[in-house]
Image (cartoon, rainbow, N blue to C red; front, top):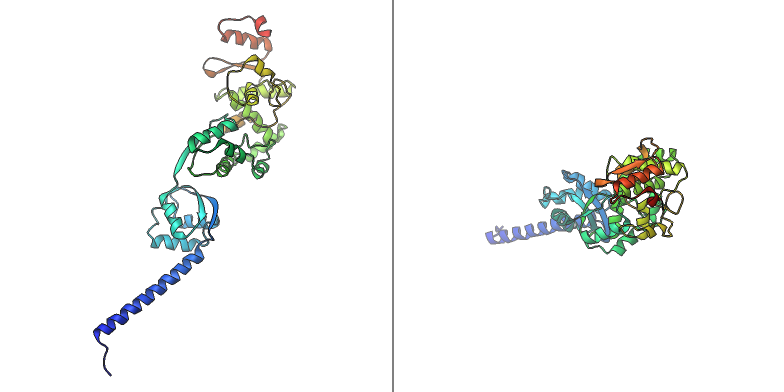
Length: 342
């Protein structure tokens, strides 16, 4: 039998390698296709903490339904040399092929910074989101009326006012209003302590009522030393059946911040605590943990009045006449008690 020529052997080997390579690639493509979750435009929030291992990242992606199999993603990332280049952060991911998904994770989220100040009203949070992220305020406010979220936090009002926790948020610039509102509510829930619900019940408050009073405290002061005393004034007034007469509720009734005038205190609104008894229908701003704790842990006092003094500190009084004297002392030019009582 004649032996094959060298050229013939080379050609056969080449065809064999090509066939094997095509077969392996075909199988690998089939495996990747099987491991990729069905494409979807739904955006899924996934947080990758700093220092996460590839296995932990893959497991999180699988648990959230972004991919089907964590092991397949880990192997693909290693083959693609992407094990050390996945960036931590908060992602809003769509289901897509593993290669595209890995590229998204290697680029990292493009983040914007949104600061929600303590005591900010819903409309002010919406305006802050517009400035920081270009988000239409109307869309944000509509997202803050989500029925499922309202039920989840057991809010009394028709919005999530009071439950958009005040802090700094670093979020993807393409985040949607619904995603942003959801993240803020989850931040509130993560900071809420179960003991607060129990203690609020012991005070005769629901959680929403506790948040409502704390939101008024946040509207009155940012001074940590004053918070518990302000809270004690409002608790004392409620226990005595006195109206709260809280300026922040008048501001909320007006819908905008400005220096209050005498006629403003007569505005007909269910939020105006100069005219209504008890608490307003729902929170009027986003309270901080410090204000919630101030309502729960305020010291026992006989204070029923306070007035802002120099530097934002407050002067507290037990009686109305003491209160008027404190106002007269703070204000310049001096006015008489009789003029203040008019």
